[in-house]
Length: 310
Ligand SMILES: NC(=O)c1ccc[n+]([C@@H]2O[C@H](COP(=O)([O-])OP(=O)(O)OC[C@H]3O[C@@H](n4cnc5c(N)ncnc54)[C@H](O)[C@@H]3O)[C@@H](O)[C@H]2O)c1
Image (cartoon, rainbow, N blue to C red; front, side, top):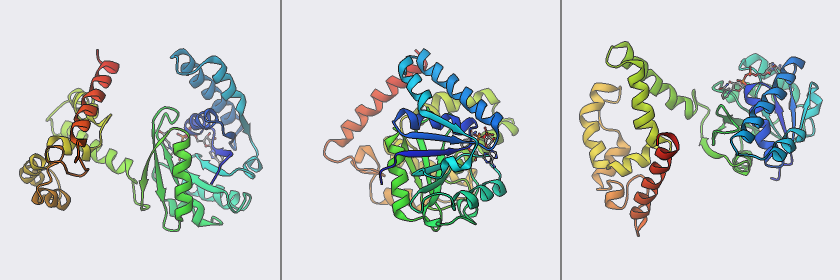
């Protein structure tokens, strides 16, 4: 599906931030908010963000000017009626979102695709009174959404393939990377992982095992440093599935509800697929891809180190 006109509902922190990225990539963008003061605040936020983009050399002043003039702000919900796609980013309250969608879904074209940027409310529940549930799904940006590459796309039970694919394509068209959550579960993918990590970090501090600064240092300079370039599965492939299998065999029972070794890891271990070192793990490293992967790893780490610490 070819989208031309994007409607953003909610001119707050997230709505304002994402509006400029859609405008940057040439979409007609209309931003709607129910409150005049929020619209003014949203415009101001976009101006501040664009100024920073110019000051950091990411954008020319002319480009920033073009983006600002491409955005239309409106206090009328009708302004969203002829949009090809809507990204709703209003307050995180289920009843407010339900009421908004019950009304808007009856105003828009039947082929318009409808998305919500909810952080974690069930997509299916937000869609309770929507007309055309097959075209409704989650499009979850991360703050600041004009800079963070990942967009999480969440299917509800009634979302169809065509709408999901169209939103994946839309996200790619604005330079984003996508993570598709196949089921409408609490926390989706991002917050499922984020909260698991946060729980463990707080637990370490509360037990007096480490202070806040040490936990942050372990994340920033260790785990997070690697995760800026590679996902946990890629990291295990580099480290060795055999090694992580051994570590899991004595640490899991101390640390979590999964007392044994998880099946995915155990199966690969039993098949002798240890990751980069054997040419296959979670990913395929055959036919020279192992050397390419090692080279790419080091190049990325050097770049991150230079960008942040040298
Ligand atoms: N802040 C984050 O880090 C973050 C990250 C990802 C997703 N989100 C999600 O994005 C959404 C917006 O969050 P935010 O941080 O931009 O909040 P925000 O408070 O900055 O903005 C919310 C906006 O919604 C508007 N609004 C409230 N009721 C409305 C209604 N009935 N109709 C139209 N507009 C209405 C408000 O005027 C406000 O401008 C929420 O669902 C939130 O969970 C937030």
